[in-house]
Image (cartoon, rainbow, N blue to C red; front, side, top):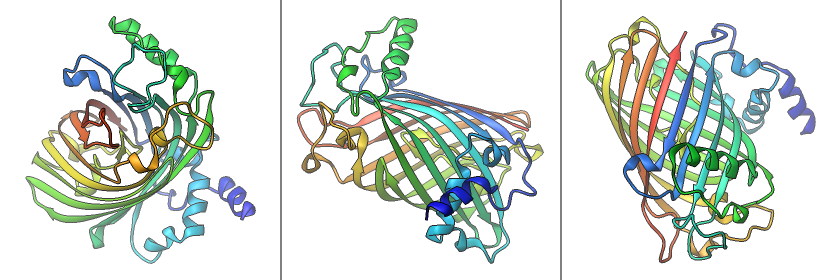
Amino acid sequence: MYRLFFLALLLPALATAEEAWNTGWRLSIDNDLWTGRSTDRDYTGGIGLTLSGARAARYPVSIDGWRAGLDRLLGFSGLNAQAENLQFHSQQYGMMLFTPEDIDSSEPLYNDRPYASLFFLSNSAFTVLPDRATAYVSRLTVGFLGLDLAENVQGFLHDMTDSDVPNGWSNQVSAGGEPTAMLSYAVQNRLYASKRQQLKLSYEANAGFITDVNAGISWRWGRIHTPWWQFNPSQSKYIQQSMPVFGGPQSAGEMFVWAGARLNARLYNAFLQGQFRDSKVTISRQDMQWLVAEYWLGASLALGRKNRASVFLRGHSDEFRGENARHAAWVGLVFSRAY
């Protein structure tokens, strides 16, 4: 098995021969303060930079070889082996920060969610089967929980915005740092597509720092010139995850609104339950909500042939039980440029 992993690391990902080296980049920024609330809490913010194209599979720091090796080992790549397909790659660098409601206290808060953070690298392959109106997503994410850098980053951002400085980061999950990973597989099916609107269904399974299965529906309406598979807001785990950037003449003039929802059957969430390393504050297994409903709605505007801007609101139902259990919501901004 170890030989498979090392061999996969050295081999370029499949089906990249016709993929351009650089197809674009995307910057995603989330912050819960943009919802108008006066305090940070829950998923308080995140940043993700996505690089798209064959380069994502061939950079020296890429983990796409590991992802492709796992696909072959688990048989996921065989789902499209005999069909005409298009394959695209992307790589994302990012971070996510989580806080309890009371960020003034430096003491452990045992009746609320813990502080948590993730700094990560993610590689994705997106395979489209046009004749079957189906698309597949394969993603591997690796990173570190509990780095001290989380406190420094949030402190810097709060200094810039003259906000209250969080004082409890020493109590975060896996404080001091711990490696983590997540493997994700998703299937998308087109349900309906016209010149004005598109509707698709998605199924997903994740194993790692978040372990769940989910199903959801996505819709967009407006001035649409691109195929149904080129817009993927459902691909998120708090922050919008690594997906390829698409552009070109057909995207010029696009302007549309979009919305969606999904239901997650969640088995494990390291941001709440901790991982292997001891953590001062965690949510016990019996206090976890195993069904989490999620929603999103937003608007996107193409700025010429290469640039796109989106704004959205995303949220979910309670993730745990207790006196401080609550619905969470945040606003995101996304800027992308295609080449």
